[in-house]
Length: 278
Image 1: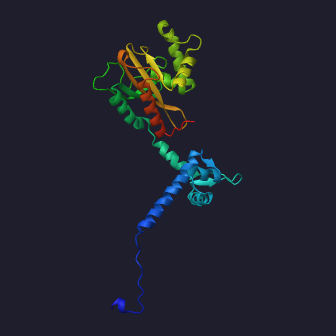
Image 2: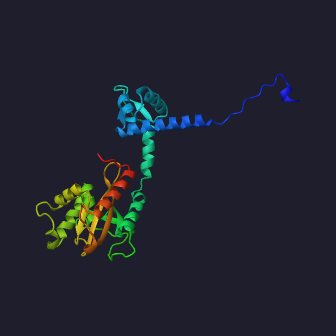
Image 3: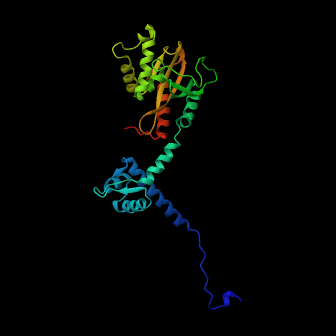
């Protein structure tokens, strides 16, 4: 039987894809929802409706509607006592998943290559190992400087720029013990380069003031270096980015172009690791 000639036949409307305008509205709604979520994060993860609306540039009524949807998904919660909104469990789980992928070596490698190519210097990434700062990634320019350090080399805590970065920012008993042991067995000419009253404290303050560590002819004769920290979401150093070169042609000044470039690349990698400057 021809269904179209049957008076009892009722056609079922087929599902139509969203029209372009509907798709745009959905995308805009998603963008606004993400803006609300990111705005809450920028405010420290907790804020009133009025403050959050001001942060994202929308009316409180509109932001409230989006917050209701985010609360249904567990991305946002509300404090019953203060009525403030804060990031929920699902948001924290997403953040933890992202942090697990935040590999400092992988994230700093592009900056390492840019330093090598842009400045034509030897550079490397180091992490804090059991015996001291340990090189884990090493890059050399076309005309490398001859140095006796390579991937796997352990560096001095006191006499290398890399070690001084960890000494200044990773303030724990193990790091300080390594530095004190080095100081105790150092020859007189090396100890004479440090502040006799507070050698370790002075080094730490200097790095914190400069935002990087610099050395000239200390760890390796004829070699200068600049190092800056890669900071994680908690502000702790998880690696150090270091550039080095022959002292005669390497500007190790803390405000020089090499130091600025090293700090810039370290800061960029730190942002990818979740660090936000105060």
